[in-house]
Amino acid sequence: MSGSKLAPALVSRWRKDGWCVVEGAIPPADLEAAQSALALLFPTAEEMDAGVDNERTRPWRTWDAAWPEFPFKSTRLNKLVVHDVLIDMATELLGTDDVRLYLALVSAKYAHQSSGYNQLLHTDYPNHSLVVPCGDAGYGHLETFIYLNDVSARNGATRLVSRTRTEAIPVEQHTLNLEDYGHLYEDPGQAAGPAGSVVAYGPDVYHRSVDVTEPGQARFMLHVAYKPAPLDWVGYQAWPIKGVLARVAQIRPPGERAPTDGARVPEARPSVLDGRDPVGRGCSLPWPRHESVARRRLRGEPPSWTAPPHPGYRLCGARMTVWPRW
Image (tube, rainbow, N blue to C red; front, side, top):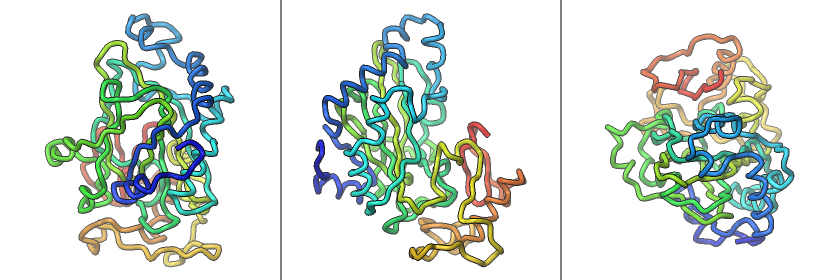
């Protein structure tokens, strides 16, 4: 793909399935430079397999490690995060020239490093957004994996499920158990690709991690996400995952909508929790609901509804969200 627009078939798959793999996206010279920077951050697969516990290996034996975040000390890694290829991809798939980076981190996956509850099929929007996903143009956001080495089933290629198979699942049900949704766990969607590939997927696409068991295997990648500039309620490093709520279109009296600065706000379909949306794939919750969620977060008050939470999750307002560090 390097330096050119996405092939029509890839754009079509993104719009239909919610994800696609763009092979050869990163120019070889930039890829090689980034790969050379990895040795300063992470041990090799052989070092991890040796079982030596030291400052170089100890931090990376869990999936929930403190992965280095952008901006990195390495300019070679920083270059990939804001690479022209990636920005062009974001503008094309999101349908706007005005995009913003909101997440970038680099991670490593090794043999016998447990994926924890990420092995369950889940969507990412709860810790990327204050509201449920919206399918209208201009309201999506793009997540990507930039592969820094070849990735296959042997070293933990992420499994993703086509949107066409999950349309009837209520939007609040962002984590799917194996007992009720076993057929989706058998979905053949596997995000494999050679080094330099970019996996593009939406925050409403169900996916899961897979443990690596074969010695000598490792996966190194950048996780990078972009959004349209006006989407103040979408973020990651700035506030949602850290529990710091910045100003999100201001807190307003019930019934009053947030300012749009001339942009059209899609009419919000009710949440399934309101009992008026049988399918539950609405674009967002009404603004008063957004605001009540924000107020409860700021004041540390309990949620307004209850449901059996999955281990590792806590309830927040009108939906469940991941609070790993709150």
